Length: 167
Length: 214
Image 1 (cartoon, rainbow over the protein chains, first blue to last red):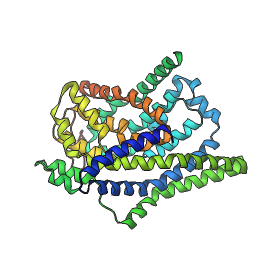
Image 2: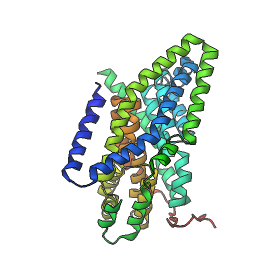
Image 3: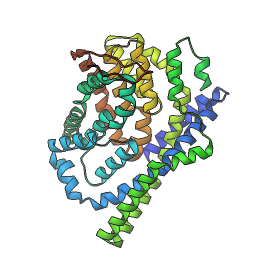
Image 4: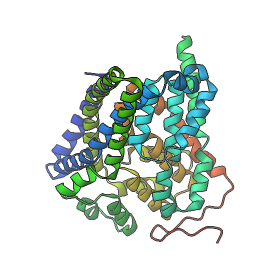
C-alpha cells in the first residue's frame, strides 16, 4: 500500500462519516455520482494508459530527455510550456501524456510546467465554457494575467529542486 | 439536486446555474453508452494503433514488455482513481455551490483573492460547474482579480483534478511540489488582473456572447 492510497482511504473514510452522520440521502447520492463518473471515465483511462505505455516505448527516451530532461534546463521549461498549450483536450489525455513524459525521463520542473500550461490554456474549455459564459474580454484578461504562470511554476520548480539537492 | 433548491435564499440566478452545472441523472443504459462513447473509441483506436506500431517496429518482446508495464501501471492507478472519485463524489454532495459563490462576493483586497483561491480549489466537479459559478460571480459583480484567481485556482489546483488525476498518474511527491508552487501563483494572477488596464465587458450568461468590438 502506497502513501497515496492510505491518504486517500483516510480522506474518504472521514468524508463518508460526515455524510453518514446526516442520516439522509447524502451518502447514497455521493455513491451514485461516484459510480456515474467511474462508468464514464474508467474505459477511457484504461485505453489512454495502455496507449501511453506503447507510445512511451515508441518515442526514443533520448528525444524526450534532450528536450524535457534535466540537462535541457530552461529549454525544457519552454518546450513543456508550448506542449501544454497545444493539448486541446481534457485531463485523460493531458495526464496520460504527462505520464509518458515522466516515464521517458522528463524532469520534474518540465512536468510541472506542462501540467500548469495545460491547466491555464486548455483550449477546449475556452471554446465550450469560457467564451460562451464570460465572453472574449474576460478571456483576454485571464490569459494576459495567467499566461506567465506556467513559466514561473517551472522556474520556481528548478530553483526549489536545486535548493533541496544542495542540502 | 433538490437540496440546493430547498437551501435557496432567493438568489434565483445562482440556483439555476447550480442546477445547470449538475449533470442530469442518467439511466444505466445511457451511462454505459456515455462511457463507451466517441471518446472511448478514439482512445481505444489510439491504443490499438500504438500497440500495432510497437509490435511492428520494435518486435514482439518490446510489445510484451510494454503491455506488462501497462498492466502494472493500470493495477496501481485504477484503485486510486476509484477512491479519488469516491472522495470527489462526497465533496460534490457535501459542498453547496451557492454558498461558495456567496462567500467570494463578500470580500475584497488580499483576503478576497485568498477566499477566491480557496473556493476555486474546493469547487467540486468539472468545467461545467466551475464556469457556471464563475459566471454567477461575474454577474454578481465580484472584482476581476477574484474572478481570475477563482478560475485559475480551480483549473490549476482543483481538488478533483489533484485527487483523480495528479496523484494517481504522477504520484504524491510530484503533486505536493506542484500544489505548493502553484498556490502563490493563482493569487499573483489575480493581482496582475487587477492592474491590467483592460476594459472588461462580461457576456450575458444566458445569451451567446457579443464581440466587444461590434
